[in-house]
Length: 410
Image (cartoon, rainbow, N blue to C red; front, side):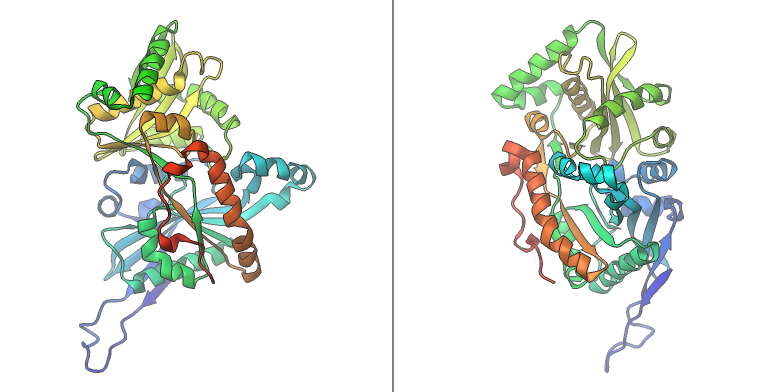
């Protein structure tokens, strides 16, 4: 599938030969359709989740989507922008809503679980912050073509609901006029968490914390160190640990409020063998037994604590959660990183680590006008409620939305 938009000469304007070259969108079924050097040029230089190897591993794994597509925007034959898509023919609502909504949906799941499946197309990144990859801002005609191509991809796959997932306000601003014209509305999603670094050492980081978090950090590090047989290792090749990693990951997922994606052995094995990004497993052991880990990825001066696993048998007493996060911060500092990002969960301990909240938003629509109106009427309030509950006392730390991020009329 491809779409083109050519320049229309104006009276007295340039000749057709000198006019702006047409843009064209192609749909690729694999990230391998983009040459590695092109991907590296377009992708965020300091976000390891946007390494091409992560997307290749996602295609190999069974994380949740039934398939992936990539919209390739070309100009003069050259790929100048890429927008990844994730296809969910029947995304389970009770897997992605909060605990309160899940309780309300439980009777429906028991009687007719098929009604909870929503055909949905996600634009951006299943595992991280959303982006349209590009070397610079796109002109309006290119944005218009991409937004139209997203709608075509949704129609072709039979996916009614379309979501631009977890985009920063600044990036959505470029697309907002075209998205609004296409019937999208906007609402806050769960914020990311980012710790800005720049410290000479881990001890410098600890000393820079406010008094109470500083005391808590030293106390938790002492309690982990005092646990019998406890130690931290940085494991570059974590393939031999995959069975133990998955078992600990499942313990976390069983307690998770939302499960949009679920890592599996094929994804982790593919990631372990990828040429990029650089990765390291911050692994906590009790003797020879793996009891916690934080999978860390690195690109440029950025790091990400991508996914965590915990043995809840001793997690609280041994302070496992904090032990692997502090070790990841130490590793990021020693690697020369300027920041490290963590997941959209557990905001209280991450604020204590010194993280700031990174505001993100959804742009949503439905291809059918009646269902679009229903989504617009119900979903923003439900998502706002879930966001407030998740942030708790830290809601005031979330940057206020820009003026134009209020829910847009049709």
